[in-house]
Length: 89
Figure 1 (cartoon, helix red, strand yellow):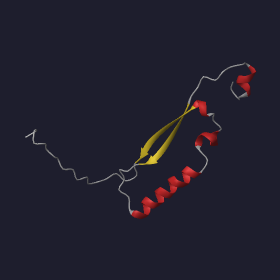
Figure 2: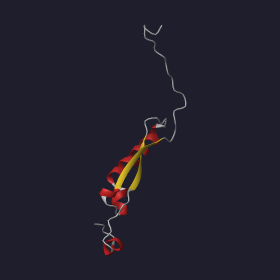
Figure 3: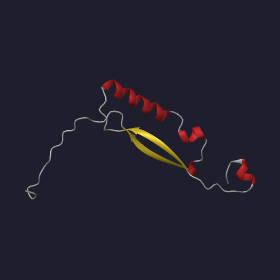
């Protein structure tokens, strides 16, 4: 049963899903050392703090967490070298 009064009054079972978008620091960032440390401290503090599901008072059964990478400063020059197998030549 739902904990919401409006749904309990009518014996309604909630039929909805919440999606929480959670970002994480991508490895594909080219940040200076200081900015990299600031971002790592930010995400460390975020990990220690209250989760968004609990902050909004959502039930765990109605929540899906979608994680996506945060790219602040994309890599500008990426050196790639093609390696051939002897069979390909």
